[in-house]
Length: 314
View 1 (tube, rainbow, N blue to C red):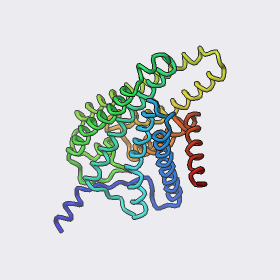
View 2: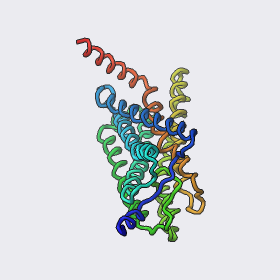
View 3: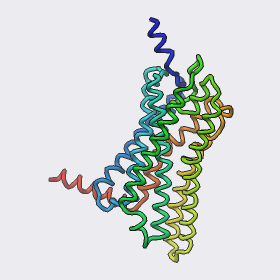
């Protein structure tokens, strides 16, 4: 009995997004639908990119990694939320919480760097098209993708180890739907100011610097676009840049607001609503904004469907 109490005392309680009200049931259904859409959209994108030879370019190679990150990211928390809601449980083990923190930080950090790499790819393609084969060849894209995963994982290991090393108070209940570092720091019984200062350094590296590079890239792209003589080409390029920046702001804005504020300014429940943007909504928008609106992707999708129909007839 003593061992059970001791084991239970190391667990955490996540209040989640849903209660037992009818409104929460509607919200739960919406989240479930978005989750299925996110996994399906990103899985289709990966399949298309691997299958169709015209999509074997650095841009789509990076996009396939973004889709894989988005699948892992949303799968890291939404299935647990769904299971807890259906089972009426809100408990997550210490090990489970540590795994959520590690995978979440790996993917969040990796995606920040990958989005910056993708914006650089677009910058080179539009502003320096003649130098594109040199500046963005297969080796460069592999280094960019691999570097995003590696640097994100190393950063995550450090922050996960520090976060779980802090002693937690008797109450291990957090008003969140997954174990996130800012929410866990609020539960700590010790002063975490020094760690938070180190977190600001990570925030600059993974948030402010990539966001600044992405913004600068799209400013240069727009300046180049405005010099185009074709009105149709200007409209298309401007529309693409506009939607890309909307998604980037949706991702980085709440992310920066959550991770670069001192612990004392975090209010209960606020973090979980901000986290919805960069953990649930943005992964569902990325395939649509970055690829499905693209003519090459639509053509590849038509070819795949025609191939499937042809094989069925045979």
